Image (cartoon, rainbow, N blue to C red; front, side, top):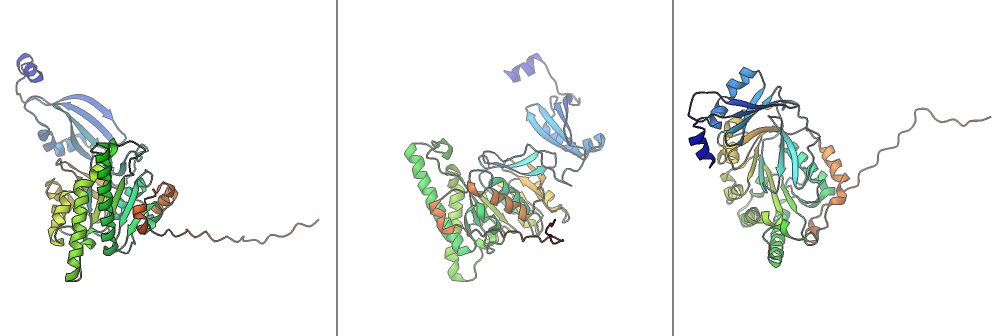
Length: 384
């Protein structure tokens, strides 16, 4: 009906006319301009003109977002919002949604586990990959979820989060055993769904719903590397179990957060199958183009050139893409390991009691008390 009215009653014809400005709204970082596209003009035509619009308006950047059919929104920023990231006060964790970074158009990049259950984060040394994980952990620590860590570098990255972790594996052997336990828990949760006649964890009653689990894999390549032929069978078993979790565990509330420096088919059997299950992609500065292709080449080919252009002096800058083909530049706020560890200690009481993960519960070391400070002047008794 809308197409009939537009074509026969309004009698709109394709003419070389500019879009009409429908709304101009100022923001804390610049302007938002809503345009009504004339007949014959598509959002891709406006995207192609972003660089010319940036110079014409004298702004830092211009990005285009489609609002609805026939309308697009120009998001203009007057300065480089990624030079010094300041997250808005409204960016707080809620309902499995964790704000972790800021986009170049001034909006908040959020990690929504209900919409994007599994994700892959890649980046070279000193690229800001660990900083993104710290922001993610300190956001998840405030939510009623269970955190499971796999850090095959003897736990040097994730051990400070021990007060908030339900389980921690620090070598490939313990990681393989833990993944088997998670697969067994996945099967038990599917039995629970079948018992109640539902197909999703969130359709269960509150009194029987299991706690969601987020599995944090710090260096995925360590799960693929083996030193002898006899270890290949255990490696393949662990990888295939992770692939099973990526394929089915979304419905029962187990989510994968995989990080690594290098990711490619040369890692071994199951690498590309695991990557295919990881919907969200975040790629920082990398050392080779093949890693950028593996991270974004299959979902957003245009974003690969943006990844290779990230400078070494901008740690935390990354390119985030999704399976819809869209991508954006983001940067995480600076967070020290001590700040993330303090948040984990503060919200340690939210750590769920999970008996099936009890053998992998990390040992929490007590925080040493500060040494008493002696006064500079010794007190003298008062005499009359």
